[in-house]
Image 1 (cartoon, one colour):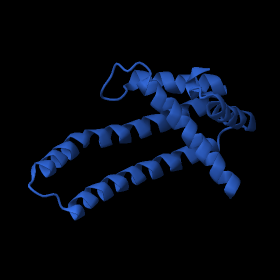
Image 2 (cartoon, helix red, strand yellow; image 1 turned 90 degrees about the vertical axis):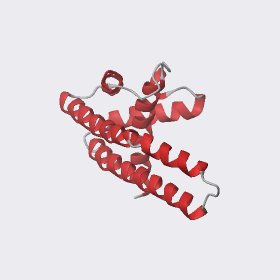
Image 3 (cartoon, helix red, strand yellow; image 1 turned 90 degrees about the horizontal axis):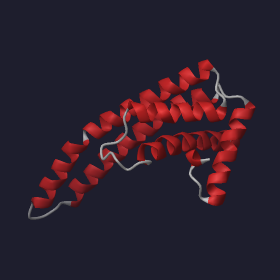
Image 4 (spheres, helix red, strand yellow; image 1 turned 45 degrees about the vertical axis):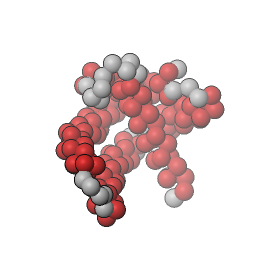
Length: 152
């Protein structure tokens, strides 16, 4: 069970690193990444792991689902910021109110993580031993020399 948890964590980390770093790579967008960036990230992953067409289709679907959820969460950002600004303008700030806002955000983040984990576990099951080894090596390289997952 411990090894399975490590493998799943490694895959999650790898996918989020690639998608996240790809989204930030040029620093030209303040509102996240678009479908072109997502396609570039999944194409890069597919190339580096030598994915089959079926695996690539699964990766594209999973990435689109996760990106869709992320966009939905981002759409709620403006409301949260307005609520926070209103809270700051008050004479006094109540700890319970702040804790409630934090709890609400944490619940949404946990739901997003759970959503991603289920999909990434399913994707992990489609990978070959060699493909999993490539991911593991990238993760080790990332930790050893500080290089980005997507930079080699």
